[in-house]
Length: 133
Image (cartoon, rainbow, N blue to C red; front, side):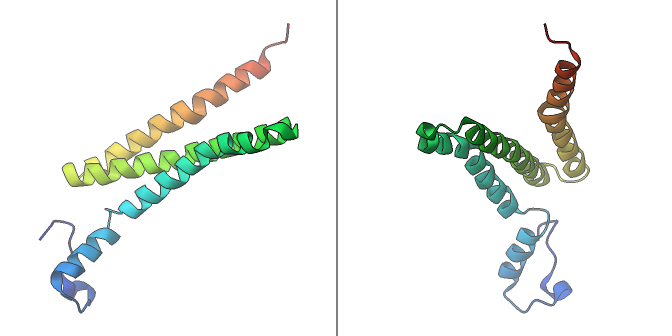
């Protein structure tokens, strides 16, 4: 039995042991539905501004188009970060297990937060502090 599996008697499930084991694995740390769902949502959010722009280009409402695009991309990046960290949890759990399942996602999330949020926000703050010429 896989190391994450719980026996049928431990959870009181009255099914075939193979079905119960697969169900419990899916509900445990290995949750590919989170990974797949967040990947789909992030792709939809990151592509939406292009479709929105194409369909509303001639309406001459640049501010609304830019605002919508900006909100979609920022939200899409956040959801993509969740998806990528979820992928790291899934793969690390299957390949290594143990402490790596905690360490690798934390390092991954930290990298994404630094590169996608902290550095751009720091640069924006610097740009705002600079006097215009």
